[in-house]
Image 1 (tube, rainbow, N blue to C red):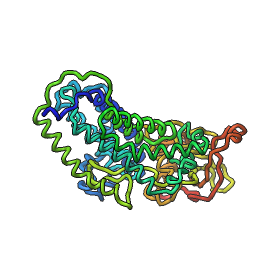
Image 2 (image 1 turned 120 degrees about the vertical axis):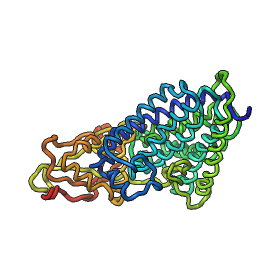
Image 3 (image 1 turned 45 degrees about the horizontal axis):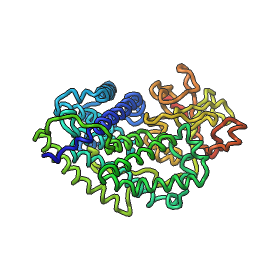
Image 4 (image 1 turned 135 degrees about the horizontal axis):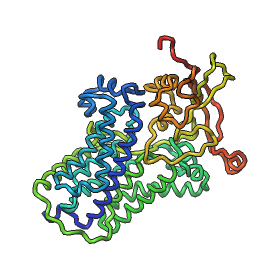
Length: 470
């Protein structure tokens, strides 16, 4: 079938595949370096405890059959190795079916991780990576030209990401309709980046322009993805520019980067296509069958998008094949942070020698400037932002986290930037206090060198120590 392939998009496929493999690599590296303290056998929310109560059908995963920290580490590092091989182009050296199977490996491994990841893996970028990765399996390699229907599936996914995010904003917080959300967002977002302070201090009229431009990019431009080149390429380029602006303004894991990767699949690069053989019949049948299945499953996110009760970041099936997306339907006006402190004193006095634990990305010391971590994702730091909003968000894991600090647990301490206690002398007591944080002004920054100013609000967790039985 001559219409089945689009040879002019061979370079777009190549760029898309290599970029997606890089995101996979980051995701697996994040899992490999953080899982033991979060999900391991002595983690804050252990996988073995999770699989005991959640059946395979609700959370398909290799770890439903067997779990050990060594097996999880093996899967995560294997995912890193396969992703690196895909970055290097190993799939192009294999037969068509072999390349497809190779792309299926990271999807299967990461699905196994996400489906037992619990609250640490409950965000939209996990489902987005899985949905994108599944579609990528059927893009083929250098043996055939890119299939038109798969390219359209990628555009359909990009449309849902952007349009869904735009709708959730218009239906959510009124500040999006009033164009005032960015008066607060850069200061109150979960994990600010090194430039977020400067973005916050941009003139307010420019903030209005930013929000208006965002609405255009998310509510109008997505429809242009289905218009022939060069309009579709221009629409994708505009989305890429918008996402890069977001990359500069904060740390949002790989959400922006996967969106950029999807937009790259739309760009028609000015390069002559190589000569390739016609797609084999079996490949055409498989691609068309998968495409028809995904289109059928798409009725659920479509119904969600047009609903007045639209929800964001929800998977409609346990394989994360088709999902709904969206972010920041509401924007916090005030930033709260939980500051965790320990003391080696015999008694927990209010005026005792309390020393603060510092996190890698979460604001703590007002003089410490935020760093850029995305697309690498600091899962504990991200969840600490939710813990500051309400203790209920931290209910499943916060008490265990404090217990691990009292034990000077090595795996847990590796998640932090620094501990105020030596490895052989854990604290006797740990407490948590809630502070209100705000960005300093230009004058305050010059006078104090601090990018944050904080005010004590209340006790979050009273001084706690290990029980005698432990």
